[in-house]
Image (tube, rainbow, N blue to C red; front, side):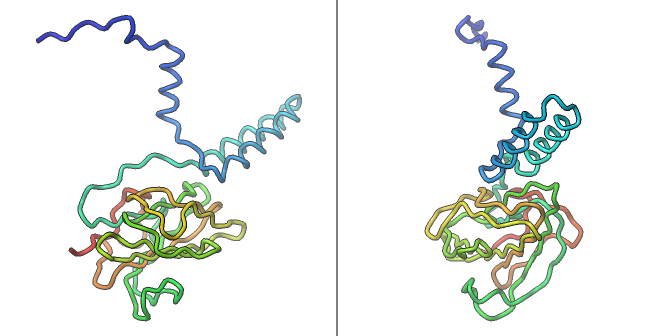
Amino acid sequence: MARPPLTSSAVVPLPRHVWELVKGSVPPIHATGRPFVASALTLGLFGWRHGWSRRASLVAAAALALCFRDPRRVPPVAAGAVVAPADGVVVGVDESVPPEDLGLGDTALPRVTIATSVVDPYVHRAPVAGHVSYAAEDGSALVVETADGVAVGLVHTPGLVGRVTLDVQPGDEVALGQTYGLVPFGSRVELFLPSGSTAQLLVGQRTVGGETVLAVLRA
């Protein structure tokens, strides 16, 4: 059957169409970064008559918006997939005893360490779907437990000027790849996997937060 012609009610005005295209292609900015971007733009307004000040403020605002972006990600559908909690480079694949406050026991567990640079997105994402069973008050550590009772631990180490911001608290449910917080200006995140898990990445490989599969949990 032939498709009916479009009616006038289905025609989208050009300005709205352009706006929808911009919204779909430009990632949103995490709430933590909005004051930084606003401050840079405000300084630019005060110095608008001075070309160098205007250009510097616009460049700074664009750079901050880029770093504090929260890009849309599509997590894998593979059962038991553990995804990278952040964009960056794998700098360690080993075993280590997790910090005591995580409550993951006192034996060495598989660990993957990812370093995020100052130009990578600062947001961090849930490596598995489940509920937050532990969150340190300073945001330095987090544990997510799946519906099957499998716990995955995260330890955040901010840079010299960074501070961890968590958007979740114990008891909250998180989806696979969901943004749960942010660590600005470069950081490291250690992911502790359940005993017997095997990391699928090597040192030096890049990760895409919320999409790159680090390991697959055994059923």
